[in-house]
Image 1: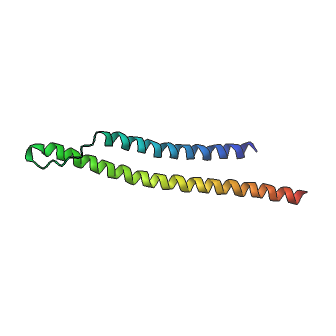
Image 2: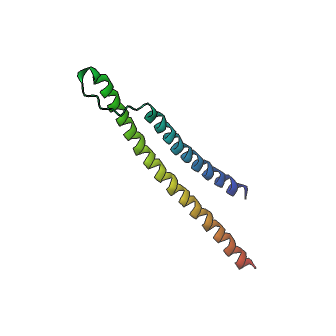
Amino acid sequence: MPDEVLSMATEWIVLAVLTAAVIGLALYRHLITQKQDFHLHTETREASIAGRQSMTAGRLLAIDRWGKVLTVVTIVYFLALLACMLYREFQKSANQILMN
């Protein structure tokens, strides 16, 4: 029984870490977009500003891609964990019925 509790604790910790990573990426994206400049800078004297906008856009694309991947992984992991828990409980109840 203690090994079963330990394995479930490990699985829940992994789920918590994945969830924290998704939330962390969302907060990081929010911090980056607070400083974002939405105006088009096309003049030559504004080239450095346009370069920063391009870097910010690239960074946001990478964050969005990783955010989507981590969100899907977290949801799939949660559903698999839930299915395993339900199957374990089903097995326990089936064993109790057979024992009685």
